[in-house]
Image 1 (tube, rainbow, N blue to C red):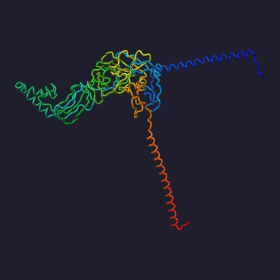
Image 2: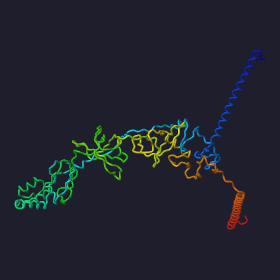
Image 3: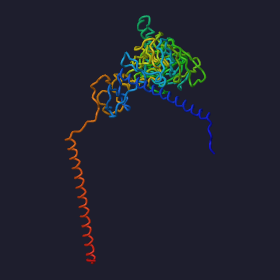
Length: 505
């Protein structure tokens, strides 16, 4: 069956073909013009600005002319500046495009002044008030005849008997007093000296008066507690002999105690007398206590590297016991109470010796940053106080700082680990050769593989030939050795047959 086209159909098909040809021609012409324009722009940019050549495997290589990489020998390619063609006033500036900033998630903040504040977390223990400790020692030699304190922790009151002691020396001193009392009107000086001697041996006025009144020396002398408190130590037992100066008892009044907190060196700038500390104890859960700092150690413990901070607490019910652990929080502003420059911790790169930040260069079309070393003061929570190196109003990077620093290292500019800039060794242990960060040096030598001379080639061929001959001789020697082994083995077999009476078989 044949298809018939009318005159009208033929006209429509012809018109469609003509229109298609026209559209295709116009589109091709536009693409060609765009390509020529782009090519022209590239050529123009290459002519006006100097092209920087780098290695795709070692981006720190920067050359002013094409050549080979001095590290791996690969051919250098034109460096891509990311579209940041703005002229930098400082050669150490790190320029970034808007897309690079977004990709690296770089964020900045303005340096401002403020009053630093911080929460200082402290650990400590309860200790006895050293001003309320009484230690009794033997003022004269003797024997313990009776002991009224039988265990540690026993509560005693001021003037209460602790022990009775028999002392020949004390009996002699009492007799001297009685003798002097008879002649106190004739010799008052001797009388006062006798009383003073007993007084220095811790006899009370009432005990001395009683000796005079009774007219007889006391055989056993009672040792009385000088304060009310708790017996924390007992160094004698019934029947012990003691010498002058030997320790007997230690009594502590625990109605007032100290809470001693350990403060590290970095915490000391935030602590001053009068600061309030809220603390709690595991032994007394659910309760928060508070006190004010009354004393700060003037020295640092050389072993623990801490200073102790003290608060004083009343303890009427004796609920605070010595050596109880405590944990406290001190909310304080810096001790100087003055405004200071504050920067976030995230903006700082630490090298162990230096603190580094990247400062944004103002009035740039494309974001630019520059490396700067600063001196830091005390830590303030999530911030640091800046001692020097920054000024109020400057803008610094707080996020993406490591990415900026990595760009600086690859570009051979001053960075955290390379403060002087220049050559960067990305492959430790390899000889990086001469510095490659001189984009303006036209005489920089190319790292081209060294060509061998004709004599060197002949020498290498001769050496190769000798090696091959040596190898062949070694094979011939091996063949001779194998033949010799076979002959020896055949002769040995013949001898064995003859010895068995089978020769010739």
